Length: 230
Image (spheres, rainbow, N blue to C red):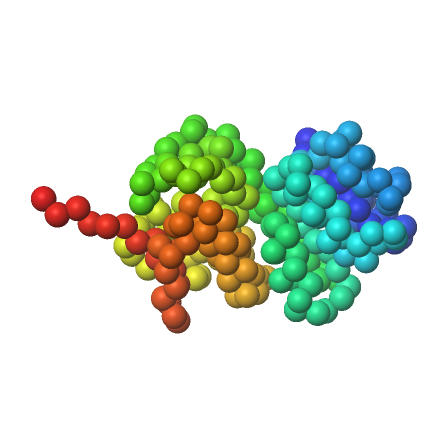
């Protein structure tokens, strides 16, 4: 049974979400102290976190930062606010998805299932190594290492890099990337992919590899590799 940590301060909404999730055989843990969310997260070690943005004491962005400093657990934001900057901010902080309130529970369940399937099926694959531009990519550990050091990527960032590197020197369409990341592109903003790619590039700057993820306007993205001439 997957354990979901639900960080929601509206008692009636919390109860409704919990009952729906339990119908799908998910375990649900509700935060008891909104001033010590990280402490409870560390104790519970959930498989996925659902978190509202507007919370007592500290907002969801604060707790997302705190969790991301310690864990790559998948995080899905819930929010009644309709500012596009909220979605951008959540993705920049390392969230895996964003659900706008009010929402259909079928959509929420679909996003949870897609995220869990992507993260935990992906983690159970055997460790694979790939080289790209002199760097070593270890898919099973979500790391990429080069002479300048080693960086750790989130699940989404690694999946984007994997898709691009496996088809290096070829344009991978935005639609293909979105389908691979979120299963159902109908519920995903095109801007969400842009934010994730930008986050990946930002991390690759430390290895001086960011320039080799090229944007092909109106088409998609491409990981370039020098072609060896024999």
